[in-house]
Image 1 (spheres, rainbow, N blue to C red):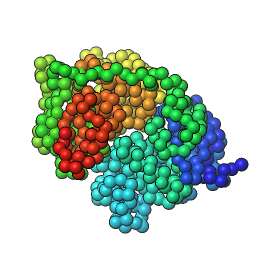
Image 2 (cartoon, rainbow, N blue to C red):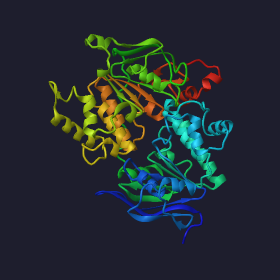
Image 3 (cartoon, rainbow, N blue to C red):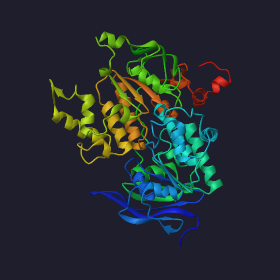
Image 4 (cartoon, rainbow, N blue to C red):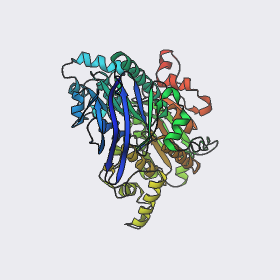
Length: 503
């Protein structure tokens, strides 16, 4: 018998791509006034399932039902007409348009003042005339969410909506979703691999593994350990934290940033008089909420942005070795792998080779055998889900594209690693694998600048860290001298309201 509260339902849905079965006979119900979580690691079939629900993909088996009737959506646009809205982890905004132009695609009849109020309701104010291409990823994500939350949707399908949000932003999102679910009777389905997205505000959890449903129950009847085991098959590895490198005591300075100020794309001064040094084998963390200058700082350190003043200088350790700080000796794991680090139309193997030619060449010739062997090891080690190493990146999921970039950059023979949100979009298992590799690089003497919006990540990896707010960097201190409250105070600007110093 059909549950009267069930708004959207996939019954026995299956999807095959050639010989690969992405989803195998999975049934999920989205109920009125509830948040259901579709949980699973990268490649578990979550995004494929959402695309079958909204008509983007046609199932090979099973059927979709909306309000008790079978619904054969020809496309996601047809689903929108039935008031089923989808937010993907890859932005649907048009970069060449302004914020207002993007918002008007969904709300053509609203005034500029009404659009501004809507944006402020679900996030901080954004200039309507700003071009979307110039906005940080976190603000783009909030605009996507605003377009859906401000609509008259009956069902919201969200694919990794919190992947670029800091803790405070994620908490606010779930509070808004829970409130809207109750007030409007919305049915909400969220696909995620983040366990912390599940426990506080969600009512039902469905776990996918290898395209199959392995657990389905009310959130109140489960716990983090059970969900972890359901996702990964065993919890022992996840309970063993990698050994931290530990802060260097008397090691030499490898990189020094002195009084650095950097212009932003949409602000006159994104980085304001920032100074710090990184020692050999040290992980220095810089944590901030999206849009506070941390990405501009990373770009300037790598050499992608010219400072307005100040300098980035090689330290004594590099000078003694007779090397200058240059891009060839610095690895850069960007937060946007397609725009900054990878060639989407090249193969997995060739994307590895682009930055590893010095390690994979014999004279002026590429050592293809060495490159193929490296690619095989990296694919296995980082569990990149692809048919072969010859497969184009365009055919991979967002999480697997990120794995390719991280695997490549963490394998380079360098003095400095700049890691910007290195685990963004990755499942828990791969996240710990990335953390382990970063810590191992530090133990080998690589200096790491970690840019993060995740307090847990920054505290886990960093030897010393500081927080950024509106372009200013707090005092950089050893990890034991920080508390979560102190970090949060600086990240949110509470220290400014209380009149406290940067420290």
